[in-house]
Length: 353
Ligand SMILES: [Zn+2]
Ligand SMILES: [Zn+2]
Picture 1 (cartoon, rainbow, N blue to C red):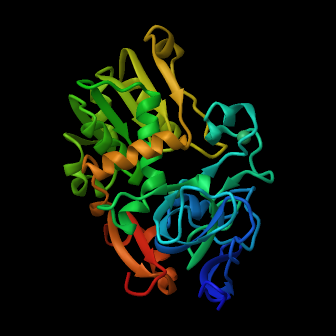
Picture 2: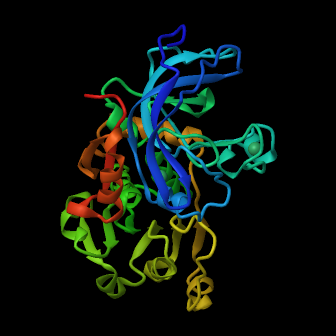
C-alpha cells in the first residue's frame, strides 16, 4: 500500500488485444502528488456500453491495446495532485468522457467535445484513448469531473456522461416546451433523451424502436412504436432526435419531421454509415434544420445532473443487472447478448457497494 492506503495493484478489466478481454491484476495508478490537476478515484459503479464492444472488436483505431475500458462510471476521490481547487478527497464524482486540450479554437469556445487535438497529449477520451473506469482505481483530469448531488447514488451517477449526451442532442435541436418530439432508437441514450424531453415539457414524446424491448420501455414515453408503425407518422413531429446509429434511423428521422421542423442525428458516431435514398426535396422543400450531435460540452452535463437530481429522469430502471467487477465475463455476455432484456449492466469494483 502507498502512503494514502491504496494498494499498488488493482483488479481491472483489460482488453489485451482484439477480442481478448480479461479481468486481471495490474498496477494501480499512482498518487497524482505533484502532477497537475489530476485526481485519483476509487470506482464504485461502472457500466459497459456498445462503444466498449467496438473498442474490443478493434473498430476504434485510436485505442491502443492493452487497454482498460470504461467511460460510464462514478466513484470517490482518493487523492489529488497540485493545482486542484474544487475537488477534494472523499468527494463523490463522475466524469464525462471527453476532456479537450483546452487550447484549440473549439475548446476555447467550450466545445471541447470537438477538440482539434484529439488523441494528442493534453487531450483525454476517458476509456477510449486513456485508461477508463472498469477498474478499482483510475486517475483523471479534474476538469472531467462532476460532483454528484447528495441524493444521487454511484450507480445513478455512472449515467452522468450519457445524460449529457442526451440533453445536448435536445439542446442542439433547440427543443421548446409544448413541442411534439420523436426519439428514434430505444437504447440507453434514446431512453434518456425521451425522458429528458418529457421532463423539459414536450407536448408528447414518441419513442421509435424495434424488437421485444418495446413493450418494456413503454413507460419512458407517451407513445412507443416500431419503425414500421412510424412510417405512418411522417411529417408529424416538431423535433426528431436520432440515437439509432443506422442509416435507416437517420432516413426515418428526416421523414418524420414536419415542414420547418428540426432533426438531430446523434447515433452514428463512428465512420462508415452512409445515408442514401433520401429525397433531398424532403430537406430543401421541407425547410428542415438538420444537426449532427456528438458527446456533450461540460456545462450541458452539469444541467443534466440537475435534472437527474430533480427526478425528471430516472435511470434506475435502465440498470437491469448488477455484477461484481470480477464477474465481468458474465456481465459482458449478458449485455452483448441482451440476455434477460438487458439494457445496461452495472459493475461494482468495490465489494458490497
Ligand atoms: Zn458509452
Ligand atoms: Zn482542444
